[in-house]
Length: 224
Image 1 (tube, helix red, strand yellow):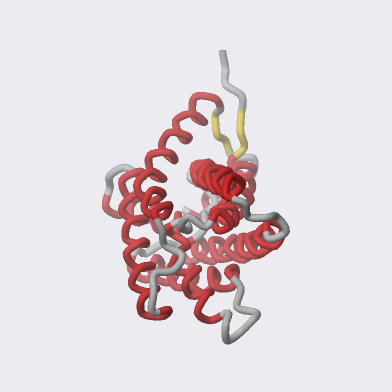
Image 2: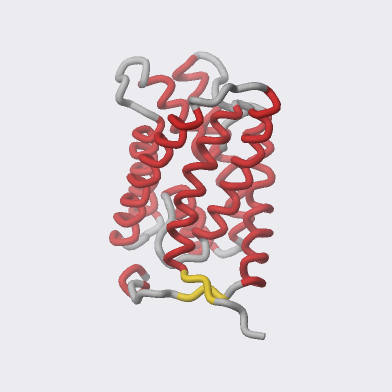
């Protein structure tokens, strides 16, 4: 029996929305922010005290822009891919700030924080598994994982776990240097770093059993 078609462009849009919402949910839970966004979160905590407009979303623009520059210069990714990825970052940042604003209206009782944190982890891993099934470039952090995998080989799951662990280390260093204490990084951050790659691989295999991913539009050649 032929599997139904899931368009890669829809996977891209769905992944972008779920990633922003999932990240905001993890922040709301306050058990340790997702590892890849932890450096941007710490940068936000430091600079928002000086500039009120320096939101978490703005911090993501700055840091993901730096990551994209590194991908272009050192991993030789095509400029069009990097520019489109940065365009996604702008949309993601707006969705992230909006999601945080909506969640800020909820009362942070413990059971609700735990539930939303776990759902946020689920949303993030589902989102990234969808983004990895689109030819359109994901946000900078996931694009870095794909670029490393293409350049040096190996499984995406392994590179995702490696990149996540490095992000945790960078976040810890930034936290002590900029804030003088450990902020934003907790036990949840470490757990996320260890299991995100596994969960992304699991959901990716599940989607491949359920659907055939095909392009609806013919933009792929311009990005490869």
